[in-house]
Length: 67
Image (cartoon, rainbow, N blue to C red; front, top):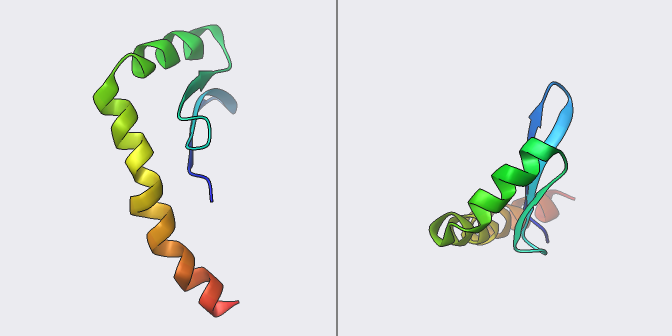
């Protein structure tokens, strides 16, 4: 299970947080600057890493039970 949060603007992906990587990755010049800023903020990184447990692991049993 992987938690992914992406930031888009005008149909262009700027940044992405992936729980398997554990940090933000930028895809444009602006996105790279934002990713570097967010990766240097330990509270933001720990909050995003916790989202896998909060969101994914709580919702998966319901989806698999219906299948």
